[in-house]
Image (cartoon, rainbow, N blue to C red; front, top):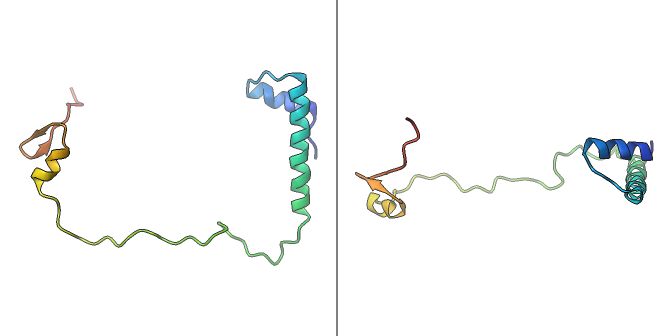
Length: 95
């Protein structure tokens, strides 16, 4: 399989790109080089390679969720732009 100049023009039209003749030729050559490399990868024997979803083992790095004391309300309210009776006061979003 190879990419033709017509393929590049079609994709450029879909992407609404105005490419010059030199750019079309450049992209055609580059895309064909990518496909050629992919063909080399397809030639590799991967029959003894186990399927993977990720190249590195993933582990959960989250800490244990342990209960602890909450901050005092007056200390929390120091972060509030506006406060009323120990609650955050926000602008109304319902008419």
